[in-house]
Length: 284
Image 1 (cartoon, rainbow, N blue to C red):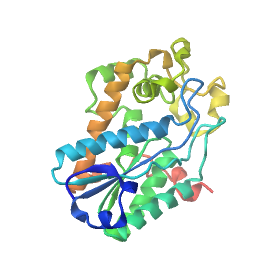
Image 2 (image 1 turned 90 degrees about the horizontal axis):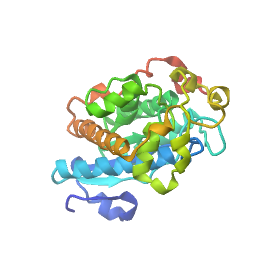
Image 3 (image 1 turned 90 degrees about the vertical axis):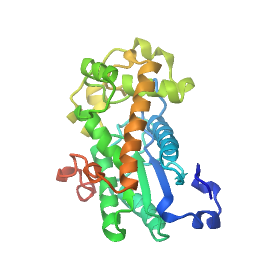
Image 4 (image 1 turned 135 degrees about the vertical axis):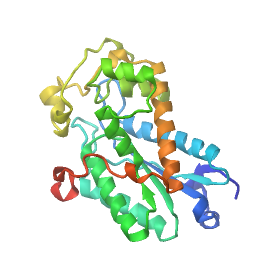
């Protein structure tokens, strides 16, 4: 088959089996359903993961001639969600097991380029996926890669050098935009604008230290019980477009490095990886 970007579920098993393994890339979006304040839908992370994964897929198709790029259906799971009605919380071990089973199901048919786009910033979520990928790669030999956890942890830590200067200025001016603030609101204005409640422009800023977000009940303890942390009133479509484009560009670069097996190992683990409290054996 020629170079394509299509949903994997649209293929017959023979069409899938006919694809050259070395030149077939499978992209998997994953994100929880989670409350995102009174102005954004509970599917915010989920919608973002789908949009970004498709964007990366299109860029990989353009940059790697002759490759088949397949999009797996998005998986609506996550752990470390912030507690309010609509937040669906999975045990971290279950998240790990689902990713492991997915990767194994593809690895046994010799697929070698599986990339997970996990659009949710909770440390337990990132580490659960890292653990699954680590075990799969040990068993099958570097077949699965999850760059988004690393990328998000760098964003939260202010360590992404490739960001446009305009975004850097905004991030420095509004440094505690953790959840459903100007970042996610701006992106959703580009992805699903009809689902964004317009009164966000009148919302006050709510600032907390990021360490407090490790508590699921932080919304009621520190967030005035309304579900966001940051600066929604500062949102704009222009900011959202910049954020989405730069994210897609950076993740495409990281993904192609994995596909070519060059310089990708620096992205395998977030800085949460060595903190035992985030491991699945600590989340019972």
